[in-house]
Image 1 (cartoon, rainbow, N blue to C red):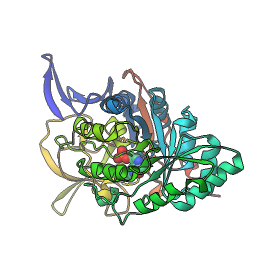
Image 2: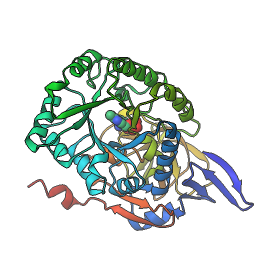
Image 3: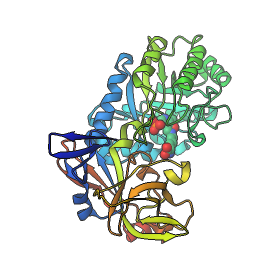
Image 4: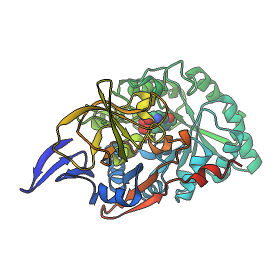
Length: 425
Ligand code: LLP
């Protein structure tokens, strides 16, 4: 977040190219967030399609020397307007369920541009994906290879492309819940199992085992473990020169705090270039494309002073944004209207009946009043996609601001009590 004067009149505080204060109002592109809230109420997720597109292009350009194909990781945000916009921009998609594949197909993505990952694909999901004609299966289980092969047999499909997910036994620098490449993790296959599969490819006549997949975790704090994992994969492939595709997974980090230091994309790519010469490269970024393009707007319901603390009780909770409760994750809290009231140190909490329902702890914020609105920043990734109906709370509305930045629409309406009850007779 950097404050500076623009021209001679306007005070601007910038979160990123799309989200900033103009004078005292928080804007997303050309739209004053307060004007959206007046019509849509809260809690509501709001996304900038412009910022999504910029993030996508920034990553694509950084990886251009590797001609990497980018598959947006749908688990980060499955909003159909975002999927459509990324698909139009040329992205493929990384899915972990038949439900996500279905969403991508509905968004107009060509099936060939979809990769299907996941440690526990059901046989029904495999059949669905084979019949849809998706581009790649990222396989994590020996039995899964048999299932895909027999599905392809049933459907008369040949050369189903498979990447074997290597568990490279490296520990990523991230929250333990987001590390997937260490030996004790449920993810991937060990190198010896992969070696064995590669010598017995004829057991799977309908499959084309053509790639290695590595994804060692999310929000990666440095690049050392990624490079170690890649070296393990390349080591394994030395004996299998026919395999020419490496999928590096996701994991590119974002800054949740204003001055978070980030590993440089350029440095990572420079390290990758000599290693990946001659390989087709796939990537599966999620967070880095959508996190800072979205925020969750909430209303302050009550200010409660108790036991020496100030609680800002807002109408968003761990049901709408679980990251702080689950990972102790940090999201900046920004009032929609700046005030010059004296700051206070507040606990920003939701209405849910759990002590973990704290969105921001010990945060210095301006003194706010009931009825004021705040934005939980950098909430575009793993926000709505992890939202639940806990405490019978309807899931929030989602608003997208157009790529031009000057208009917006509700892309997904707020759930209703009827939505919650209709499948529960
Ligand atoms: N590929 C695979 C195989 C993955 O498991 C993931 C994320 C990605 C790609 C995308 O990773 P990204 O670029 O977004 O880091 N709920 C957590 C994050 C869990 C990530 C799970 N897998 C959070 O809120 O931070």
